[in-house]
Image 1 (cartoon, rainbow, N blue to C red):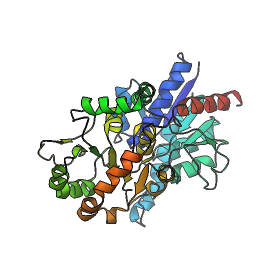
Image 2 (tube, helix red, strand yellow):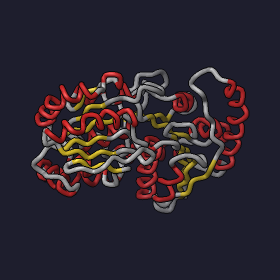
Image 3 (cartoon, rainbow, N blue to C red):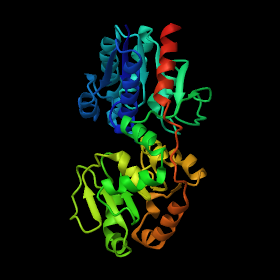
Image 4 (cartoon, rainbow, N blue to C red):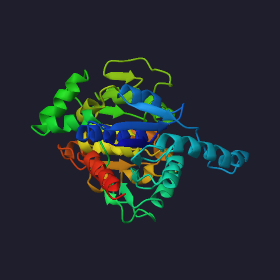
Length: 359
């Protein structure tokens, strides 16, 4: 029996793929032990225990994107995180990392202990943690085409899907048109009216929410139904006929399936789940960070299933002038989703098994 440690905390974009791989690993090796590395502050403390797994904590290593006096603390916090990671990994047979601030110290600790490591990069533009990890192991996987140094020879696995998304895809294959209408009805909307799904990532987006609030009256006047994921920490608008604001969408599979048009951020997980179930999207990349969101949706644009718009261009005037065109493009988009990511978790598990066997 093996002990497998997964590192991927902070955001749903790191945690959800890790959970998919954890479930796949135990499905294939039910006698093994799977443990997550995280911090006390991350979203993993909610998502991981809810899925039946244990989170072992390490100190959080934060790196300001601008020159700051906090940089002086980095060597000390990094050393503490590596030391804590070594304790967790001491008896481990494999580390699988998905990026984010918990992965870098885990990669360094695993290398010092001789623990085989698999690095999975979800984004088209790798983050700093995975760039470090890719130099420390030969077992590197990517969700799609990444040409950055250290990733050109990586195994293309796709991005592991949540179980509800994968199951919804399998059911929809019998009749995509009917599946989309039934999903819209389950969400509580008229299956014969266009449905617009607004989402701003797991925390919501104030910028996107503000634009929608300013155009809501006009959208409803055009008989467009709207499902709006506000974000748990943002103010909740008043529900209206045809407009349902929610703090968080519990059934994302139905939201993707039932929506004619999605407007939201282009995080790696969002793009992957949309690719599997969605029809057409207007992606408004987060204008800060590593810049990866500007690249994640490129393949969907090439397939004719999405557009990318800079946040500075996403205005009430843009929505009012283009909503008809966007819905027309959605109507012409393929009815079917894509199965490209359905086997991603199994491929990463197979890569991890190879790493253990070749140790």
